[in-house]
Image (cartoon, rainbow, N blue to C red; front, side):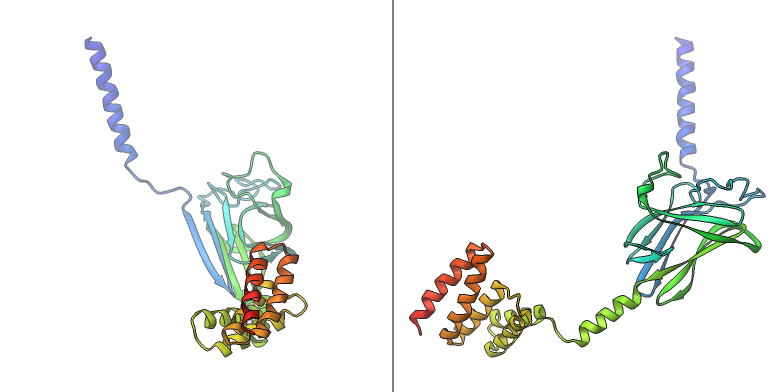
Length: 286
């Protein structure tokens, strides 16, 4: 029994020691970093870990040439784009990607991988998850970069340079943004004036809020004119309601007939019924 008590006491001491040591925080060997850079109309975010040289030979040593590398330490380096971009001549959708590289003596392969839930290089590599793979030249850096770093620089409205540096090696590649396309499209749309849907929304609001009915009609009618050869039965229905509210029952019936015909073609029983009822009611008032 005495031996059992001594054994249990020893386990209790060890347990208390384990709890105590678990509460002690120590510096991470490869601290995590997160950078977010707004460029043009896009946010680029990089989350990665930063190992240090510590007197070791990095490329061709700790990181062998010709082998897939997680490009950092610990969990994968994750790069997130808030808008579509173009890298290595390939269009990438907005979203998050793992960054993998294959370092070489004078050239690196850069891979953006769609699966971001790996710790290091996936055990089974899936080429179908490669969003883009391309090669870039590596450069000798004039001074030692002690801690692995990623830099987002050379910022312009239309792009940036993504840089990777460690030890005395520097690799960089351009990322092209869609800023000009987005801004040009917005300018074109704005300068062209309100869309048909804008006119419809404004007219419907005026009608339902009991504001200027004439203005409501003008806007909704404008919307239907803009739809041209592809009229929408729900928009025509709204126009007929405004005409009826203005006391123009003959015009309201004509528009409601068009709405009903389109509703029948679309197999929308609700709008077919509503138009049928309204037409019957308005004809009595003509």
